[in-house]
Amino acid sequence: MNWFDVGPDRVRLLKDGKEAFPAMLDAIRHAKREVLMEMYWISADKCGTPFLEAMTERAKAGVRVRVVWDPIGSLSTNASWWNALTQAGGEVVEYHGLGGFAKDLELGRLERRDHRKLVVVDGETGFVGGINLSCEWLPKDRGGGGWRDDAIEVRGPTSADLRSLFYETWRRVTRTRVRDVPAFPRARTRPVWVLANNWRRRRGIRREYVYRIRHAAKSVDIANSYFIPDLRVRSALAKAVTRGARVRILVPEHGDVPLVQYAVEALFDRFLKQGIEVYTLGGPMLHSKTAVIDDFATVGSYNLDERSWRKNLEANVAVEDAAFAAHVRASFEEDVSHATRIDLATWQGRGTLRRGLEAMSFAMRKLW
Image (cartoon, rainbow, N blue to C red; front, side):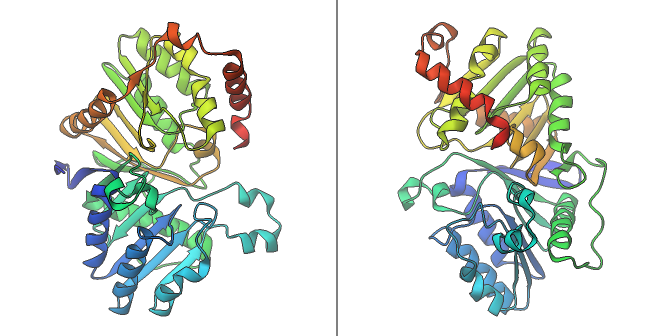
């Protein structure tokens, strides 16, 4: 797990739960002042429980611990599971909880979810990625699903920006203000920065994707679990190929949501005809949301689909640095070496039923 010094920050790529979980737990266990967690999916299992225990121990030691969790993403986890932490002095709030949904009769709330996977410790160390705290991300040799995923660890001023982003959500959900928290920056000031979809900037991450793809000179490599980009992104990818850039897309061979997988595959024909290379990774579920475009890399929770664009709170970290981009690209190359490249002639031989399922799923993509 190589560290890279990029401006005033240090960053490293964490692959899978095998690398991410120990790093996150170590940071939490050594927290001196504050632990912040914003998590879409946390399970009351042998993955989630060590995090609960670590935060509870820190709360007992007088460390401020605050958690925002999504009860839809964490549907199997009961709110009472957090009792040990709250009794120790930690603060835990639901994002658009079902109780509030029923009380306020705001039907749109059910659609708007907090899809982030964010941990910030002492305002100095931050983690962002696609990795949730559930057994699906535990290694297979520990009884988990071994899902393939990425996270990024940041140490430095960008961690303070992640802290500010957390407190935007905290203030929104709790309707309380926290003193001495700088506003989340509206513009990039360093070669490592935070991309966020929130209430005012629903399209921020997508906008960065479009900009980077439109300016790609050499390569565009995207690993994405639910890759159903809108027309503007698809057009940018096609034009990148015509400029001479190599464009590669890596998606799961078998997604965890069949209708979404069919919608992803509905785009294969047009991608292949445009010269975009498509690869599918077999084995455990590919859940990454990672891209490398020339010397730019981004890792986070953002899927290139309708939900991430318009409905979810999302967070990515972006890094503009040749050495780090080369490192992330090497990880992408390793995944591609184990993947199957889709051949146009072979793909066009699939059956009529399969084509119908793809067309139906793609037509429904805005409903999910």
